[in-house]
Length: 448
Image 1 (cartoon, rainbow, N blue to C red):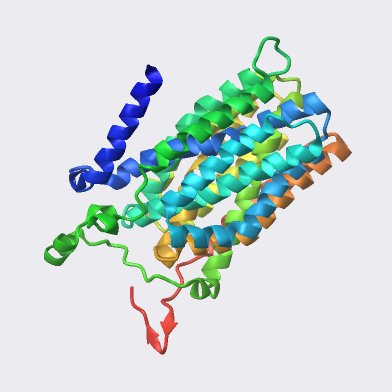
Image 2: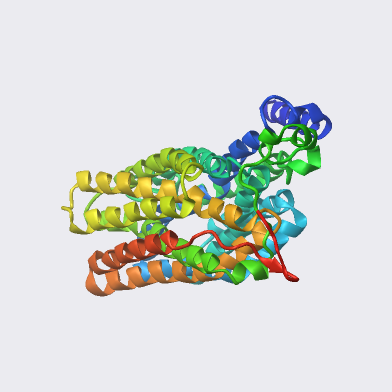
């Protein structure tokens, strides 16, 4: 009975959104609903792997005895896939629309988790990781940020920050929940295999209902970004965007210094993030903390991240985004130094989590929004995809090198210290990524 009622509710919402133009032109701009939808999709499609990869790593290590280096290679495969397919993913999103690509991505991710539940050797573990990562690449971060970029201009940074904050609400709950479910030290828990199977079935089941609510661009409903309508723009210039931007082509963007500085700065800071997402929980296990305690530390930085994504988005709409990116990226470096040189107490771990969350959350929406401000909306997905090449290459190096150093030296000290240096370097690259000059086409300078 409950299943039937759920289907009726979903059908009613689907019919409402497809047949009622008033819904899109009501008092609340539909872009804000898409921010919430962004969060829900991130929660079920990305958070169980991205935020909980350290939890899964501990479970695999205990179940099969794999080394930290071997576990790190799984993450590297996902980044190599993202680097190679990033430009293709961006092209597909721009050509076929966000809605279609997110559906394919969620469905593939769900199948990946089902396959993950049957892993019994290192090779199948790598394949499962790659399948999940492929689904997330097709319909995850790149596609959803393109969606928000399409619907917002003047308030782009805040909207991206709000959308990501909604996603962190789910992550805040799911990491401790997964740690509880797959903890091998406690009897009578579901375990990693059954948990992965249930997760996969759930994601597959939710793929269509969620993506049926996506609308690719406001122009499809007679609107402009931020809720403006063409008639209003003709009669009231105050409603037009205060951030008019020339739409760069991919080639034009690649010729700018800003594109490469943003991509490298994004890659260096993202390398720090993904490395800690993988190695933080195993490091705490090394220090004799429980898996559940490690999940609480992850939950703390996730909660702080959630708050500072909105703060970062607000700040990014009030000051130059490259400066804001530099400031928040510095917090990442400081957080790592606190963890490296602080004592091995739980208090230090929570201080690290708070500083890490400030840097992670503040930087996250700005790294996407700055590309929209600099390069426009038309080719946003393609330009983001091209930026994934250097970014994912750097994200491959961090987790593998850190895992290798830990296996060789028995400590994370050297690897984490190198990550702190990368965070500070990325911060300064962001600072020098100033807005590019208007492109010149056939001898005509396009004006903003």
